[in-house]
Structures are given as structure tokens and as C-alpha cells.
Image: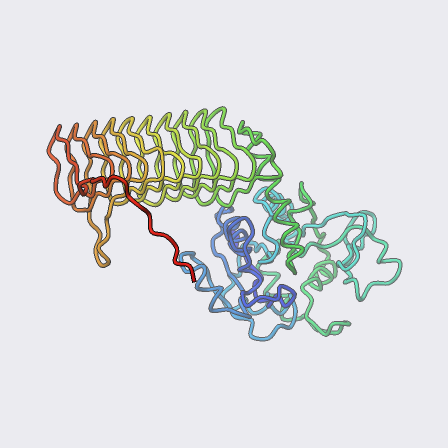
Length: 454
């Protein structure tokens, strides 16, 4: 039976106090709605229908790369009304999962369990039992079977004592949605069309409403304000950290680690505190990441050690490299094996060959560095003339003295040496020494100027 996914994402999110629609607020580096869409894709949904409203153009623009059917809910008349507006595009066969764009952590496993439980009757929901269900719609049962869902504002005192509540996540037969949704009414305290009323219709039709509970409570937590968003961020990060540790990654303190993307790692990887991983990252065996590093869309091969407070963005690092502290690898940085990049060195759009070193206060941009070369402290490649960028090529076993400026386009040959303090504007041949600096002179018995007394 084919599966459709309907995502409710039309809410304004007033309590966020933001110009950004609520479903675009970030959790672990991805919009809330993005998490839900990603989970829907893992279920191989035949179609994903997303209901938009407030800030609709922003929401649609954020997901232009996704195959989504967008349906507008022009008036906010309740959850039942929101799903009803999808009927013109909703297939009449199969099952639909009904999800919320501000409940981002629901897992593929829980949703698959819900789909399986709902196959026979055509309707099921995710519930959760807690100590205090204040504010939520209560699950009313008789002999263990669901008889009704009663919203908190409409519940009696006795019903408010019930600890099992409705999470708002459903699996429903498309045929039944086409039958039930047009019959909804708004005769309730809120004057809204409740999606929960379809449960009463199912029971009236003699159907048994299936239910499942998530393995982890935070899966069904919604986000309405910044406080809830921050709390869910921590829960989700701890969840991700536990998964990584179960895969063998050594996190020094999982409460001080953030994963904002995807991480694959080999054996005996060690990550210190306050490290942020963004995008898609890959770490080889025995990689060590020091405290405070930010690593984004980067591959680091086995045996490499990254010292604290280094920043990587779209870089590729070979085996047994030594990086940092306070190093910055920008997009296009490609480091071969055994490369050393030290403190306050920045590398951008540059390939550095086997065993080469740039250990202090250096900028290497738009360059190629051969194997076994040494770049002295304070060296920069002058790659930009204010309009265009040019390339610097440094050969194998070259030695660049401290505080040198290499004005591109320029080539430093194999085995060449550049004297400290030089500004190199012309090519240097293999095995040559190039020195460019003004002549030093000395004046004996020099008297410094004295302050004029007023």
C-alpha cells in the first residue's frame, strides 16, 4: 500500500517572536520542517504534501530542491481544516501519515511502526503517557480500546486526570480522509475544525483505532517558543551523541558536542569538548579533534591530529597530518599526507604536497605547494589584485623564508630558497636563492629625536 505524507506547516509561530516562520527555525543546523521532510523521504513516501500559510514564500524557497506538493491554508481554522485543504491533491488509495512541521524529531522507526499497526483498520495514532498531560488532548479508552480524543479545554475534570495524550501524529486511510474530512464541524470551545474528530467518526464506523508509543519521548515534542527550541536542541544533540558513541566514537563530554549534519567515522576517533560538526563530514581511524573546533563538509584521513580551535570548511586532509591550533582551512584546501599546518595559518583553494609545512602566521591562497617544502612564518601569497585572483606555484623541497610576500602569478622552483623578508614578483628557478629587500645601513652614534618641551 502506497504511503503519502501530509505535513502541517502553516502556523505563524507568534511565540517565537521572529520574522522567520516557525518551521524554518533551526534545530541541529537544519530547519524544523527539514527534519520532517528528511524522515518522510526515508519512508519512501509516494508523495509529500506540505501545507503552508504564514511566510509561505519563505518556506517554499527553503525547500526548492525537494519534490514537494505545496498546498496553501489561507485561513488558520484548525488542524482538521489544514488536512482538508489537501483533498484535491490527495490520492484516494493508500495510507497517509499526518505529521507536524514543528515536531521535528519523530523517527522513521516510530512512523513505520504506526503504519504497520494501522494497515488493518485504516486509522492509527501515536500517543504518549506522561506524569502530567496538561494542555494536551487526552486519550479516552474503554477496555483498552480508544473511544475518543478530548481536547484539554473541552475535557471534564475526570478526563483531565488521564495521563495518555494525543501527539497529533496519525496514519489514516486516504479513502477515509476523503470521506470524513468534509463532515468536520467547529462546534467546540475553540471554534476550530479538529482533526481529532475523525477518531470519533472511525469509532462510529466500527473501526478500532490503533495506537503506538515512541521509543523516546522527545520524538513527539513540539516547538512553540525559543525555550522549547533550546531544550529540544539539547535532547536531540544528546541522542545523536549517544548514537555516535555506540558506533565507537570517543566523545570526551557528549553534553558539549554538537552535530549539525552527518558524521561518519572510523575506529578510535577522539573528539574533545565544544566541537561542532556541520554538513557532511568524514573522519578516518585514529583521528583526534581538539577542543573548540568547527568542522564543516570536510574529510580527514586516518591518523591526523587537529589541535584546538581550528576551523575547517569544505577541506580534504590526508593521513597523519598535524593541524592547528587556531588554523583555518577554507574551501578548496587539499592537504596530502604528513602535512603540518600550524597556529594562525589560513589555507584557501590550495593543494599542499606530501610532508610540507606551514607552521606559523601564514596565508596560502590560490596556490600549489609541492612535497617537502617549508613555508616560513608570516609568509603570504598575494593572490588578489583587487579585481582578479592569480596562482602561486611552489615546487618540491622549496624553502620560503619568514615574512615573505609571493606576488602572484609567480612560480618558485624545486629546491629554491626565498630569503626572509622578500617580496617576490618574478619566477624563481630550481635550486636558486632569491632575496629582495632594501640594503641595510648603519649610522654610528645616532641620536634619537627628543620631545620638545612646551
